[in-house]
Amino acid sequence: MILIVGLGNPGKEYENTRHNTGFKVIDLVAEKLNAGAPQKKFNGLYHKIKSDNTDVILLKPQTFMNLSGECVIQFMNYFKIDLSDLLVIHDDLDLPVGKIRIKNTGSDGGQRGMRNIITHLGTSNIHRCRVGIDNDKRIPTVSYVLGKVESDKTEAYQDSLQRAASCAIDFITKDIQTLMNTYNSNGTKDEVAK
Image 1 (cartoon, rainbow, N blue to C red):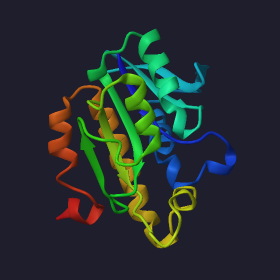
Image 2: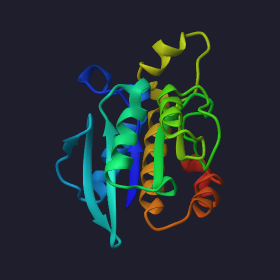
Image 3: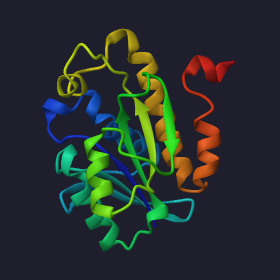
């Protein structure tokens, strides 16, 4: 069984913020795979589907970002999911808007939801898809991540959400190295076209 987790914060007030990038990707994946309405369990909204003869869970923890690990570990234990079958999708301040990066290990990079997952799982060897949201050091980090993507960056941002959704779907049938080779070599739509 595959577990694909998108990080974000529950509630309408956070819906269109940069920090809800992971939630947006999960919504796109659910739409592409015709997942239907989500169910609730362990403080999470999830879809349980079958894709390419593989059981897949698409999860949006509802614990708020900084406590995401609580929900993730409960799902992993309940559904007996191997660490190698987990992909976490989250926003990343260190990547420009329009870029995504796939990693199979590493630090949390300051992303507190990822930090909490690493703490609960006891390892940083976690597959992840980082989606760039840029950084404006003139704005306090919390205010920035809880803000909306600038209108002149919306197209690049939407493109990166689509690429992250494609990556998540590919994770169902492909190994992480293949995903890194495919998605880390290209970033923006313009680069893909070249």
